[in-house]
Amino acid sequence: MDAEMRHRTRPIGGIGLCFALGLTSCVSLGREEPPQEYYVLGADTTQAVLIQAPDAAGITVAVRRLKLASYLGSPSMVVRRGPNQVDFTEFRRWGEPLGAGINRVVAGGLSSRGFRDVAVAPWAVQQRFDYLVQLDVERFEGLAPEDPTATDGGVHLLATWEIIRPDDGVVLARGTTDYRRPGWTVGDYPGLVSMLDSGLRVLSADIAAAVVGLRGG
Image (cartoon, rainbow, N blue to C red; front, side):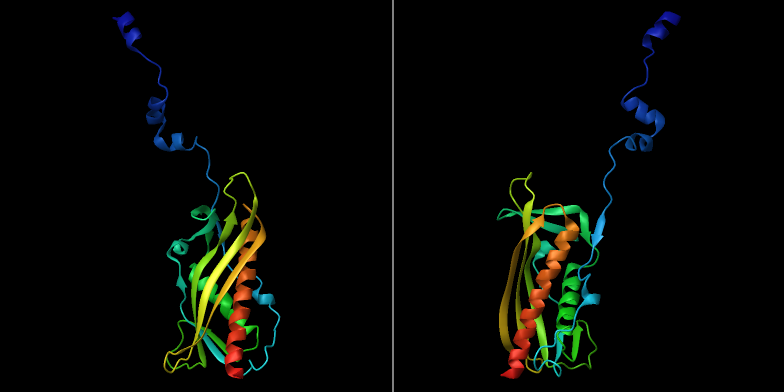
């Protein structure tokens, strides 16, 4: 009997050890995931220098809720590889809804150009403005080579915009800002945010010029 019992006895190992020690202890043996990183746009807005646009001082502007391409609605930052592939960066995310961040930075850019008042939706019902701005953001992403080992990338911001008369909803001006720049090192996400901020400054400047041009006309 003792010999038979000794023959049937087996050391605990593999899965059996997991159940003996508990699942948590087995999971802890795996490779740790990197911590998530969160980013916000407009880090330099507090240091913005007032750029007085001609005839801007008396104008009031409000930026409506923008339209955002659906694939940009994810909290993950987006990097495009080639014409059709997009990568959602699991551990690098926006710290606020992307549309709200873009609107906030664009409004800050308009304010820096000396407009009398710039608001972002939602605003109080009783507020009145000379012009409304409607943004449609189609691209807002890093650009990476299709070769996964290459690191020479860039950024792309593509947005169309309209300047609207609030009283009757008539579109007074339309434009497109297509900001594409090289110089991003793939994997440098603080650098990516900084370059996208630069694109938003160009977008704000385009809109400001169009608004002032309407008043001048």
